Image 1 (cartoon, rainbow, N blue to C red):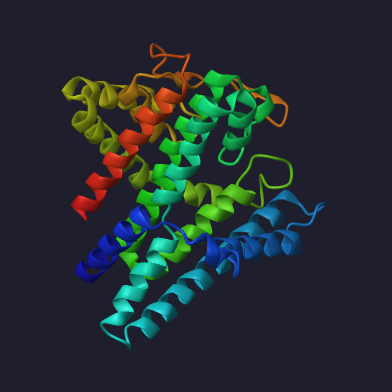
Image 2: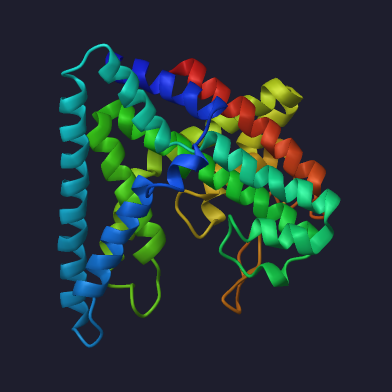
Length: 316
């Protein structure tokens, strides 16, 4: 595990300062894109309309289990191949791990929303936020755009950074590959709609399990970052709001980092939002906080995010 931690430390540093090389992914598919194609294939091949619900649920379980085993096997094979070329194999493995982390890319996407709000107004901000959230951007005003960006930043700190790092630290490349396959599947088929409520049930439930520890760890990191950035009072508020409001969120995990961030920067998050023309009436996190959020609050959240990920890297 000590070797995994050293590789993870190097990967976190590489991802923080260099991020994903766009020139490379313009020439070849990103591994997550390949995972998505595999998930899309099994969805089209086995999730046929008209099958009994129980059969779709069983085939979804078997398909997801096969994808997880294949991704873990691929990670193990790469790990074994790289261990034959020390010390360069460890450095290459750190680069592979960095590819699956999202510190720089996440901060850049969220920063674009703040910049668009200041320089282009609501239309540009809606376009920027549509790249990172699934809700209807045309239904968002400036405050809702800002809150959506902050929520995405908080949730994806867990899903895109802490969780993959956590599973790599525990299980190496097999754990990292399997987690990214699972998380990608949850975003593609883990929905409570007619097509996927049975076939994607296993993926959705297992993703909840895989993110249980990382989500709560992310919340604690955000509260710790609030202490460094804004002092003890902000850290205490971040922790208290997280412990009080996290379970109000529709997700068993996303509420923890979102509630912690809401308390850290004293902004009310979540609440009613529109997906596909349908209104989802959800409770507010830190309902007493500021609701007329703006670009400055996005910048505050980015500052907390930067310190939280720095703390995590230091702990590793």
